Figure 1 (cartoon, rainbow, N blue to C red):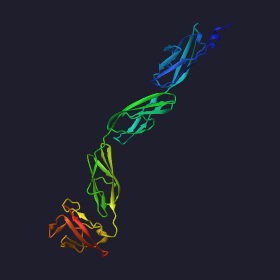
Figure 2: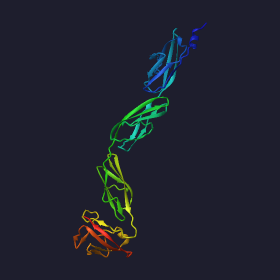
Figure 3: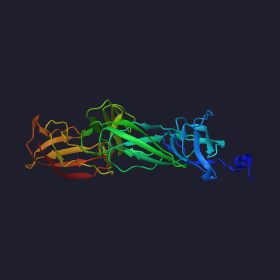
Figure 4: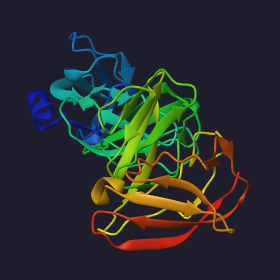
Length: 335
């Protein structure tokens, strides 16, 4: 004979829950037996000891709190007997966040995941940068925007247990300032000369590789240089190279100059005069007339004779410097 107490002992109450993620549906399934003897499945989903919030052997439920929750199931048999049990279920909760360093068009924008999840581990990342480029699966990606403007960025993370959540923010990408370079002469200069390089455009400040912060710098040494112009947190950068022509011990004599008062090549010069001076100079026109003479030339002849400008033509120079050798050739005046 089977007594009533034997029925209660024989009745087992159990259930399982799939991944419990805060804000998502969790499926609760009764494992109680024998199932053919059970009439009612009553659930206590908030741990208050009261059953009946939900019924059924399989239940889909969205928990309203996260953390360890005490969940109970009571089963009632057809003859009115009942039995209950409780389990602690960890409802995992995300703290979704990311930060970024405000970027500028074409320059790197740095994103940093700050998301966390209680009781689980984040195993996947998906960044949508809002500019129709492919998503990134990196935890802390770097992205360059080709256009300036506002972009809606979304980060979605997934966990080891299968939870998924996301967060979105609007970020602003700045426009680069206009920047061009202006050179006072060619970027290839003679030894001992200099070139003035100026930053031209609309910006708030500039910074050169020479540590200068003025809008123009004077360069005498050859090498690679750069300048950055800043405006509204963004900067434009330009790279340039200055080459210095090195001279030997022979006089390097100009064969063309343009004495037109524009400030460039207005005087005939021995380019490496400081290395070979003193220099005696005589210049003749095509008829043999001595139009210029100096016993210690200072690179100061402006193409004049008796105070008047000479015409465009070819002239003949004779130069004798420190080594006493005679150097001769032609120089053209072109205005």
